[in-house]
Image (cartoon, rainbow, N blue to C red; front, top):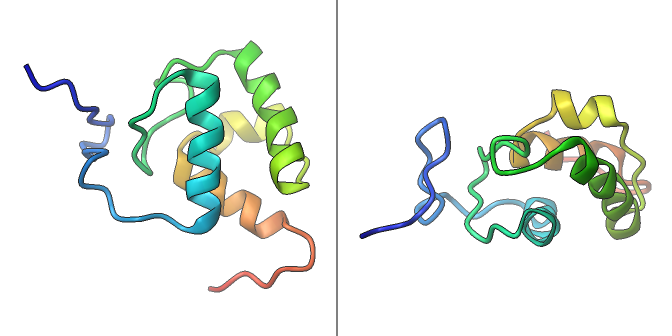
Length: 99
């Protein structure tokens, strides 16, 4: 039986295009928190096993990993890995964000 992960949007994590460096780093943070290795760019934090408690831990780890302070509200509004990575990119101090 094939047990690969398909996100709600139908993105197969195995065939997902390579993400940005931020997305890849954030994927590792999510994977440690969620104990879920196969996360595609359209994976949603809460649908992948996240909870409000894990979201609070996520905020601490994002701050430690990227030096970026996110709010709990932003975790709820930027639910996918891709959306959250873009938000982190927009907040990373001293780095230009490509359009």
